[in-house]
Length: 92
Image (cartoon, rainbow, N blue to C red; front, side):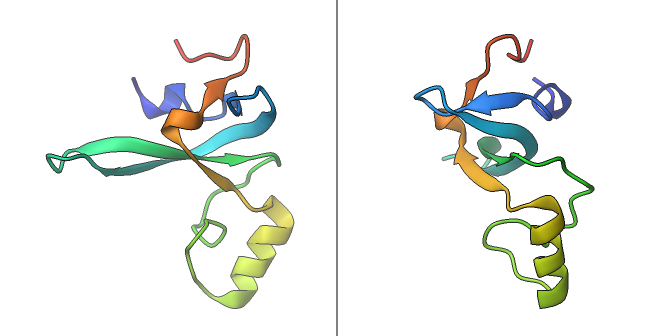
């Protein structure tokens, strides 16, 4: 599966509550050290270009971080295992 097939898709939590759209992917190593998808960043707001200042757990210049939070909202990191696709928006 390609990253482009997941980005901008609407997702819900396990209970079916809408979380927003996938705006980025979080990759980490598996037991063998190979890269594997571990989480997605989800936002309810329309997104501009990601600069990294708005990501959870990242620090950068305070002013840029605050600006990104106000304009673009704070994304939420959701573990891959907890993602459910909204009906009609499943990746192919």
